[in-house]
Image (cartoon, rainbow, N blue to C red; front, side, top):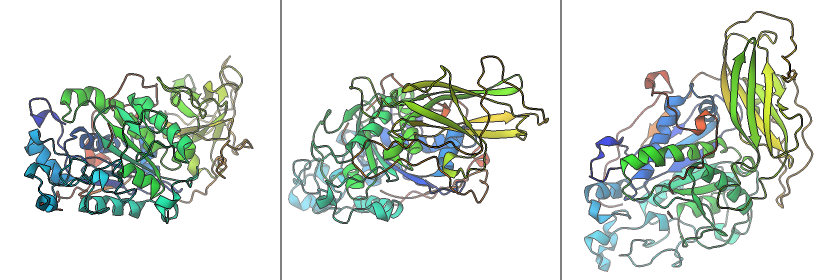
Length: 531
């Protein structure tokens, strides 16, 4: 990002790195989240946002409970600059508003020096060549290239994504299988960040037509937009214009993952003041939410959210409170209520020191109680009391993990909070104070609802997981940052709902990086005027 006086000193300077979390603190399979920026070089804010996302994860690991479990249970891959050569032009010649790469191969077609290159976001090998959403004029800003994936930047991103996303979800004949739903059992999510215009978009982008997974895509897209106030650029909503051969349709249509794009901010050359005061604090939580649901985005995105999870020491017990909502994040301002957002909350479970995905039946679990006495609404206030001494919980820090289920059987994303236990005296069980819940921990989960989701796909929401825990988690993950040289317009409006701590950018100062996950940075890639 930059300020309006072309003085970049005020903002952190990010270059051409990609990062992935290689930590093995989870015994369950990990979801994968790939986020990219810098496809269009003149869009200054996107690379900075995804770089700040990496900093946010590294700085708050082992400090914020949500960030800690997300890092432990998710492979997070970050590419700050898909188009590094074009970025050099965009920074050096601002008046050019450089959008394409710098491949000079089409100069022979009569383009001026300022018109060379290919629009990377029209060059991906899915519905490539559709002139309704791209240009075949080599001098045009939206030139699609001489062939599908003709550009090195396109091929690098395609190959990298293909290498990390599940082979079993990839379609054998993508364009002939556009009307085949992926289903709710898929894993992994991709997000491409652009500027500007304050939009969240998802497939299809090449045509104003809903995909077969539109209900799941829209449910999660609405939740992402609940944090940054974006409008939906999508079929059935504000379909601004068609885009063919772009990243979003490719990742969904070919590789079979949930795929989204953000159009952040209100300028190509976003001012630092607006970036730091508005764009960053509203879009970091949106990225965090996408990471939170990466393991099962189409299923978790339909489930209820646990909000405002808190644990406060009162006398000799912890009072744990939260709210659970099936509607708050999905029924966003400016849009009608969505059909995934009105189901009754049926239960909320609280796990001690084990993520629900790793639960094997042997850890302590509480059923949180509805404050009003019954689960009969899509919005519930919850509480439970934890007597750490009578339960023999050891002194030190512990993690609590909460997950809710709705009346259609959908589990929602996990929320977490740390607690500190200072004493370990063994005391007899004590009744809770007057008007406090009297829940006792259970070692086995109660029977899960038998109601199946009202979907046409043959997917049934899972019961609470019971995968075997074989190894204790290590205290820190390992991050590796390596070089990976690698559309449509969103800034924030003030309707961010109340969330647990990782939903908001941390106000804590960045700590010495040596006390957190190890980081290895490689040199920037060399630059070449051609691709």
